Image (cartoon, rainbow, N blue to C red; front, side, top):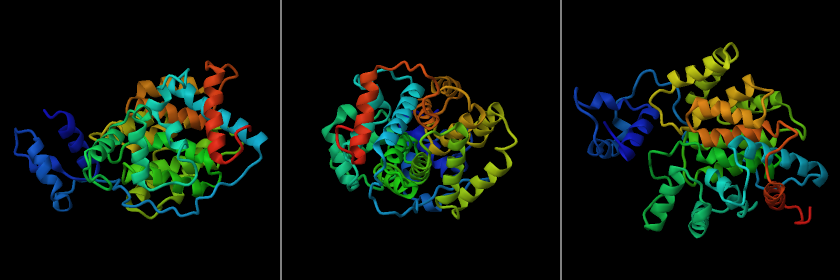
Length: 349
């Protein structure tokens, strides 16, 4: 049995299409020494069959990073709904006690504002504010390498396609109200610690959030997600196969069948891999369109995978689903104020 880093590395190698069991003698287990040797020759290792979802090497979305100013009276309620849905879905009732920061450092990234800096500047900012760095393996791994003066940008690690950047993506959709701009900002953020699907999923969520109308319905959310999936790197083989999956399996399924299908389809993947988690979010929004954000969180809790991140993102995409909100007003107002300020509006808005 493998543990820790070795287990995560084997799962990520499997998610990248490498048939690592074929390299291990029968009756033996893969060791950390095996993994280290394989990582030196990843391009020449045997590929597993079937392998339907090769991750995109580089997400291609291009748009100038400039904020589109909108009418504050319509913008603020939109952001309130996004933020309250996220907090409800994640089960967070107090922002100031750091719960939200541990799930997704929205406030930390908001401090970077619209002029998106280089990855080195992002990680430096994380290092200066460690108490706000989200509780995901990729971020902490990158931060540790940075502090130890080791190379980290673009370096392979077992959490490289995780869902951590997808947790932060809704806030980029709030700041940049042009979908291509939101996707570009989210992809730039994600590349600090991620690659492949980890960047693509974040760009998809930001694109979808940016295109939501002020008073969106659950059907708007699922349609925006599907639309984003067809627009970001649609020719890449793995994404083309994903489109086929969505056209054949998804429409005729049910939530329970979809959840079981994902467990089978992505067996052996890391639990925080962004692709199966994004598909779970899409499914719960599609088959539970009338559920409150809090109820979506409970449903996703039972589904497993990246539970904290899925609850946060699904809640944000759903928006507040109930007139009754179990949040301290100051907590919600503080987060909304941060988003509005980062968008470029005066602090008093």
